[in-house]
Image 1 (cartoon, helix red, strand yellow):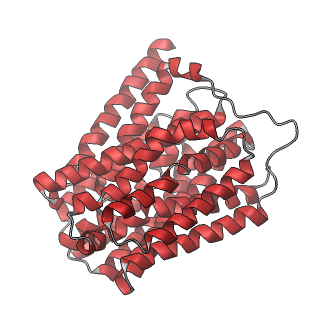
Image 2 (image 1 turned 180 degrees about the horizontal axis):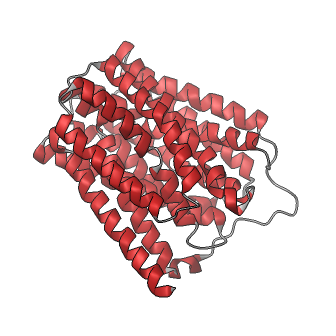
Length: 383
């Protein structure tokens, strides 16, 4: 597991499972219309998935710890593929919600193993770069998965978007099965679950920073398609193009975050939060204007894409050891934040309208900045 090739294979699987989680973002308006429900309720397809990951992440990893790592990776992708196929043929919203919750249990298993392998097989100085390769799968899902799912729904139906996601997961499954070498060595130690890490104040502070950051990111992004449809007055094809633009520039943003996070552990998240806050203010000010929004979406994608990577490096650098366990904790924290952000955004839409949704994100990012400065003060007092 020492070559970048293997990291890119793992990233392919991340692409598949992340497209399953976030692919619904672009088709929420169509699903809401098809089942005659509110956009807020349709948002449960995202928030419920993330909540399952958040609550059961560490427990699933504990339950599966005795199985071979490659077998877990392959099995997870098989479950994702099957669930997406079934989702395309469901005629009841609550049954669709239930079917989508099944793969959510295995999402943290794949993520935790992939991130742990990236960290274990890289030099300390290159840790954030190795992690950025894994996170490139998330970026690729944003670049291709989400906009393609949106485009499929516009050309055909929302059901076809789930079939496309099933195809993506099946390709990832084949890649991991046939191209990834056997991970286990005969003398490899089992997964370690050291609960003493919860005594670390730094870990808790970094988890709170990660939570508020990611919640702020997804409060608005989770309803991006609905905002562009109702405020910017874009059609389905234009929305899919904007999602593609958002993700494409995100590739560069992910690389920039990976390059600077290890070198500047305070300044990188600080600049990220400030810039993302400015982007949301621009969305509020110019959201109804087509041409300015195209430029804003490009800048938004460039900044947004680094959020998960920055948060992951912050959390996993808090304590040493228990690599899979700490990554499962981060995955739970991140998905709990996605749930909170999506629910907060839905609440904001229901009470203040889609045009004002950015203030839900602004509130979360202000809390993230406040917690970041608390961390800085704590570190200064220790030194």
